[in-house]
Length: 263
Image 1: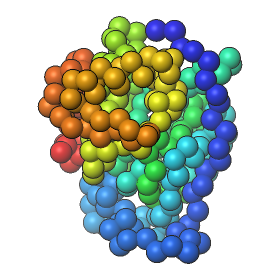
Image 2: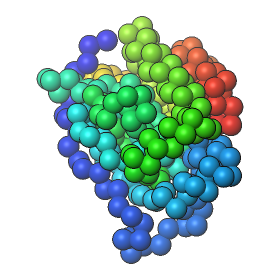
Image 3: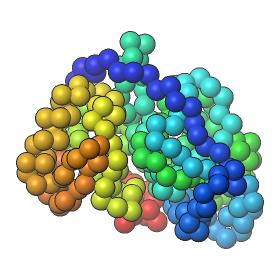
């Protein structure tokens, strides 16, 4: 499917230590255990990392990584969702993966590189915790539970990337939108997403008109309600029946490799 011209993400990350914010954060949002990778660590390994985990707010549209920029932190989302995007020279863009509380951002650091060719852009605002890059690499070099967790997560993430490429090539926009909504819902505690059609078009790499038509089909079928930049899923089972096999392939692989993250 031909990707149309899209604007290049330009907003800088708004991630700042929570202590710098004047508005208090609910205690539940402060808990790094909301991230399934961190929660799966043995007590001793988690205790070693805990003093270095920094709570950060992740605003909608914030850019965590730019292509080619050296990574200073890795991020473990707790309530936010982040999209990995490729942006072409002509400005066309498409999402290659979505990361939420099941995983982390910054796999390049332990896969032998210090940079990534993709953008990491927050698609659903919330919170996460970050860890300095050196500390993550030091922990990985222990060849302990963290290393094994991150390698299994990386395999699951590669599966999602490959399936996304297949889906974007062979399936209809309403099937792609259904897959994207389900993947997002798996990483949220509610059935509502704050998302404009323009942002969805950027994620899927299609025309905004295509998203309007696809969302209209899903709404007419009683599967979603779309109003003023908010999408509410009304019938999840119906949405699962409407989507292609790509969502199921990705979910089965994540549940197999990371059973602690299965819902």
